[in-house]
Length: 420
View 1 (tube, rainbow, N blue to C red):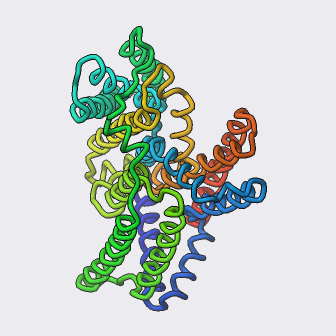
View 2 (cartoon, rainbow, N blue to C red):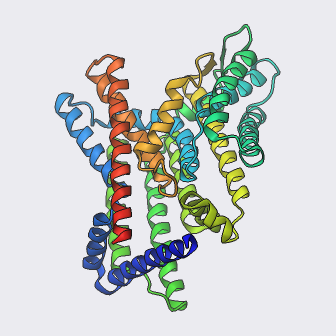
View 3 (cartoon, rainbow, N blue to C red):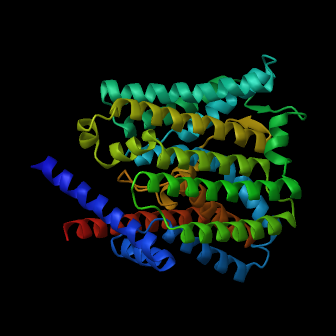
């Protein structure tokens, strides 16, 4: 009986998606708007709440502090958002499975400390030390997947244990030094703090991004037509490409008034794009959503559920290690406070605030980017207004609660729509 219900629900969802595609294809922009309204009524809010939140945050802080939206402040916000955003990207993957990793902050600090000590005490080069630090994160993720798939330890439990254990490992690795300062001429410091795209590089990258977006969608239209399926509307694709060009073009110009796009943020954005493509356009990505939506149904469908958990936990800890290394480059050192609770909770909160569901099966790689920008905007605005740091934690907590409440309401709306 349960399998029949699942099949019926899946068939209904596919039929709804197909109807949306036919509507968009046949009516162009008007069809796209109609399909968008239908999805909203069905509880498919997507990233709309976080985008509205960003607009509200910008308006509130700009009215109280006119320098909030200055190019200098925006560049600074993006730079500081990037490393924790990389960590949050891993959290998004874990949340898509309906699991959690509470130890990403501790893992990030431990990985950064491993890299720093190898460079400082053992004389290793940057590339080798960074490779070891990242592999430390991967090894932690593989250990977590073993505990989950082989022994059955809940992710909340083993990641909470990891939070404590890897904080201790950080202290052990640093030893009596307490703090390890990266060399002045370190390429990591330069990359994380000083490297920015030139105007020519920025506009060339912009053109490449827009061209790639249009090309991928045109290829999708061609393939769907060849397969006898309803293709996306060419008009909608071109309009979206034009809006992307105008929006990114203006932002590139405005940020260029100060320092422009930092290498650090460009790396973060590139990782988000890669993971977005992996989640939306690969078999692995479809399997991640399937397992997060209904693990038992995914198993019966022949999906390698264990392999999905292994890959996701490994990627999550790898991103945590990379984020910790980038934070070390930005702060120019690793200390006993690296990867503390603030980093940990900020990364998790960013993924949830960005629109990733705590219930699994729904979210996007872009949630990491939008969520961390929201949190960094709040921190920057309150700092400009000279508000006590305690208020920042309170506001962040309220925003997180609001995000989860919206997710819960939209989930109920989707359930009601499905029953209807």
